[in-house]
Image (cartoon, rainbow, N blue to C red):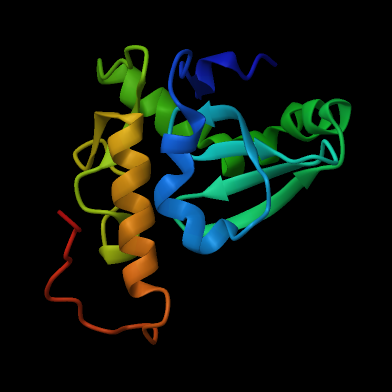
Length: 158
């Protein structure tokens, strides 16, 4: 299976800018952006050539594979594609006529961490730099809150 339909075209986009709002989570670890998913998550690699998923729904970095060949094996598995690339959501969006242009990803109007859903009505094409920035800032602000905390306001730095 070809994963390409479930990836975003990020050619020419500054990877440092994509990761900037996530430095609080990434720390000093030197990650490079390998790919972006159509849902706006980032597949990262590090100096050891291991691969990780910067999961913007959960606000976490998860290990994926220790090599590129292992990453391809991971993405060959249907269940992995479903959970990592949200293939079922991307297909629904495309069937609804919601197509991505280069530099865009599907992004929730109401982030999932704030109670949004993966419904076609909540997901829209968004500049991937904007998506990454907003998601990183929201996750940074809510990371220490207990589950179920009512959130009445989100502040973005000017």
